[in-house]
Amino acid sequence: MDDTGTVVAFYLLSAITISSALGVVVVRNLIHAVVFLILSFVGVAGLYITLSADFIAVTQVLIYAGAVSVLILFAIVLTPTGDRGNQETFLRLPALLLALLVAFTLGYVAIDTDWAISDREGFQQTASVIGEALLDKYVLPFEIASVLLLVAMMGAILLVRPDSAMEGK
Amino acid sequence: MSVDLEHYLIVGAILFSIGLYLALAKRNFVGVLMGIELMFNAVNLTFVAFSRFVQSPNPLDGHVFVVFVITVAAAEAATALALAVLLYRVRATINVDQIDLLKW
Image (cartoon, rainbow over all chains, first blue to last red; front, side):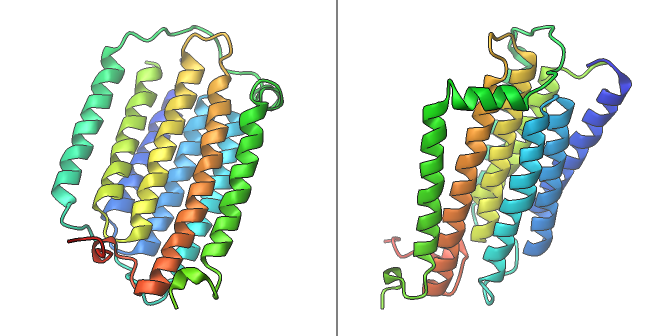
């Protein structure tokens, strides 16, 4: 992790990720906020690549930058006369204080703790090892995750059906 | 000059705090959801950083956990956005400060 390219990539990607996350906070238009959110997701994917996590990086681009952000855009488009602004509620100041407190606490713990750092190199291949672990050691959580996705999909369809009993009429 | 575990942990902490602020302070339901997604991302980044740098017999278990977190986050996003659309149909607003039926 000592070559200059990795260091430059880390600082550049961190700057992109954090500044676009701040963009989600300050931008006043909700659609623009989603665009900044996508940029932040892509920045995190780049950070995964600097950690030699290639499979997770590709998954991040596919699921977060692709699927989840399109889902968020759909939710905005399906609420046509809803509020398009990105304002804060009265909780703005307490939330700011709490977020700063969490940031300083987590940062202090990260710096102060003596982590058991290993001197191993970056991973050579991750996808095959993850695949074997998913079908061997973690096969039960893997199957439960498939059931969870099915239930979430059915729940989402049932909730937004036009003749849904949830609409109370 | 090198990039260590602490650098990634600090980036994760900042990202988590921004997500926390969004989730707590935004008026729009979709803005709250964007904050939650950012917090998921910060946690995943921390998982992958620990998996890369810390001593472990199976270092890639952190990656497997991230795969599960992404799965659950996708399920959460689908359900929550369906709830947002339903809320809009019933109350014609998705501002969380106007959804106060339970307020005494």
